[in-house]
Image 1 (tube, rainbow, N blue to C red):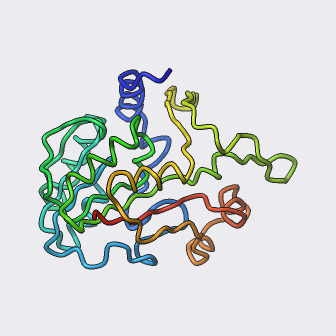
Image 2 (image 1 turned 120 degrees about the vertical axis):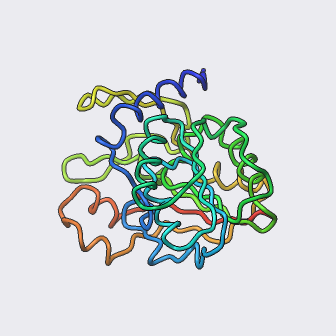
Image 3 (image 1 turned 135 degrees about the vertical axis):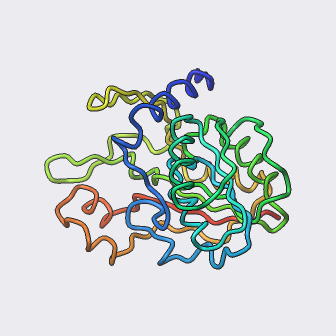
Length: 249
């Protein structure tokens, strides 16, 4: 059985020590591999809008919103080190933000019925309680507020390359928790690969209506990468990232 407090400790420790060094930071205007806000235009004009980022990391996505004249910037992250990095980065950019260190699943004094946008760039999948997290996010948003998030496409986690062919090596329907040892950085992660329907149904139960879902690969962005790379080969065959834009009813 998954113990959420054990997962918090494991994953926050990883991000405190080695997260950005090994995984890198996926930040706006990119939602993930080969998907960008510049092409999708999911946010539109954010000037004067109140923004909350779930999993704000080093603060670069908050900077992106601040540079586009958002009126308030808030960020949440499970890692104290990431919060420190975000504070330093935003201060250097001449921006201020309210930053909170907390798991996204927990109560942390974020105002309710307050934000125009809540968003999460490659962070929502870390939650130990997807339904509870979506309910909390809905509570933070004003009526008709928008929630945008991206994550690794579940099909991406099911496929490996074997003998120059792509093959399934994991059941798509398996949502059990598992640990990943990253020997290169002497770190461990605990994750669950959820089905797309799990995200969609949890959004509906939390009071959202989905306005747009993106899983297409942008060819212009892909052409900037080495066409022989494993990720490009995958992206030509199936989605490696998905993005959902939903509105609070």
